[in-house]
Image 1 (tube, rainbow over the protein chains, first blue to last red):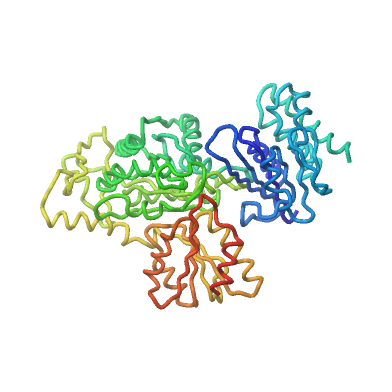
Image 2 (image 1 turned 60 degrees about the vertical axis):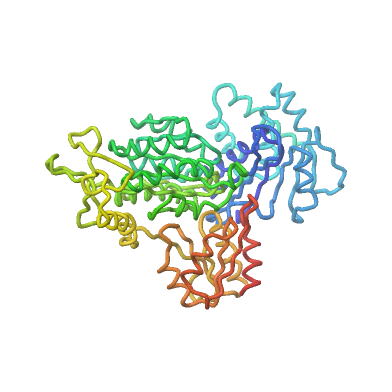
Length: 178
Length: 377
């Protein structure tokens, strides 16, 4: 992997930075170089928030994303920020349960992430891990078992199982619709 | 045992670096974007037999680490601009009383409380001149998570060696950046301990320098009883108004640092062979400048980069040496222009020194530096 740039964008409190951290941990575990940065406001919840991850086989010079290969947008504002701004082969995935998009661009694809997470977990706490499953289905930045091991190591108690389940459901949602 | 890369945050690396360096006392008042250092120290220091104290404010934090150091423990605090302002008075006290300690200022956008979560490099001059009176400070700026660890160790070593506070100043981007790092094994990095007095307690002069410019220390609470004051003092530590002593002491506080620049100043060069344009910067801006210079070279422009790892004392000699071979200099920095004036002071009016100053709470991107390089090349 020469260089691969990922953005998780949405609202503060959705766990976007945790999703970025997990991607970075998994990549490092796999022997890749990873850099993760973020941008957020002063509120603990709400407001535009973004986590960026850069992965590479080589040492990373500039740690922030310049031209993302994939953006996962979990709020309308996040979609607006990146819609029409991406390079030709980049993919923009959005949560179609809460964002409307009729842009007709084949690289912009919506999936019902909120309903999937709510039905699976009974809350939206794990929406970020659902997004991580979606990411891996779009681009296997590391083998799936490596990401699953990373999730198991990161979370405690019953959250391990819950997150593994929603990760797999997010992954399958994308894989089965292709 | 083969060591593996770990994925770690800059602030986490600062906390771990402090423990590696032997720090066993932290006092602080958490503030974004430095809070992770306090959070991690509150757990990790206890695991290694250290002490974590949550203070009522930054004045108390600075006072507490000064006291802990005098009692013999390597100590640190971490803050950001608003807290760093509040620490200046007691930081000056630690300088005057020659107390080793490390102050971490994770720089955020100001002025005042400013943009709490956004980056800046606008405390560069505050670190140097925030205290009144003649004094000198050592300040270091990491550009990677690896450097967050290594420069924290170096900050402690310099503070112990020169018996002075040292400021470590990552910007928010570096403090919050997570990346893959290979942590040094125990013993791999040099860890310096302060010189301690072991002679007759009655003969102890806590402020009389030896041949290396530094007076040996004794621990408060030990059999060595001595006096510390922020006011002008002589060898024995008691207040003294004698002008000859004052002239010596004021000079000494700077001389002990400026006479040992080779031990203190660290820089790093990228693409500086056969160079026509020199970019000089520090902290996270190094990462953007490195990428910009790399692209400029690919485009046939002979650009190079000097990273200032030691911010203070300023790397005058290295800048003069590299400037001698170039046609112009560019200084990108996340403030309205602070470092650029130091560079101009060193290279003189003949050399074109261009400023790329950005003060919006955003980092400088490689493209912005590349565009400026093309403009001034």
